[in-house]
Length: 104
Image 1: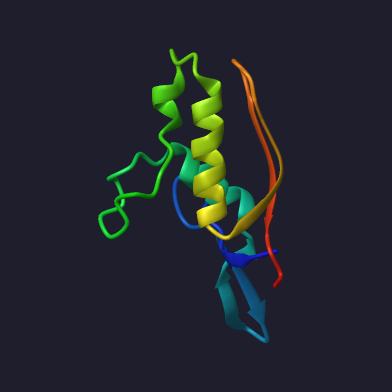
Image 2: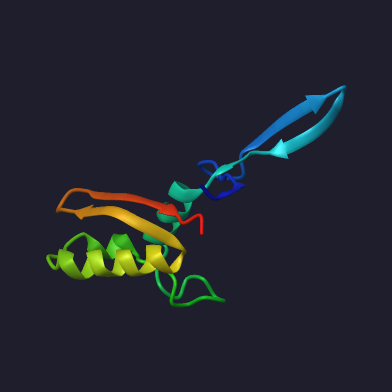
C-alpha cells in the first residue's frame, strides 16, 4: 500500500483532526493506489509537462476496436508507476485493474 494525500472529487479532502483544541492534522492521508490508477487512465500523453510520456488517455478509446494495444499501454503505464499488476481485464464496456505497489 502506498499512502499519500487523497484528492476528493474536486479538490483535496480536508478532514481536520483536533486534539486538545489544536488542529493536528487536516489533509486526509490514505492508500492512493486507485487514485493514481485513475489519474493515469484519464491523463493524456503530453498533459504532464515534466513527464510528457505519462498518461493513457482512455477518452480516446471510445471508438477503438484494438483492445489489445490499449491493454498493453495500460500495463506499461501502471508498471512504470511502480505497481505490480495481478489482473488486467478490458472489454468493450469496462476496464478492471487489480494492481498494487510492490513492497520491495
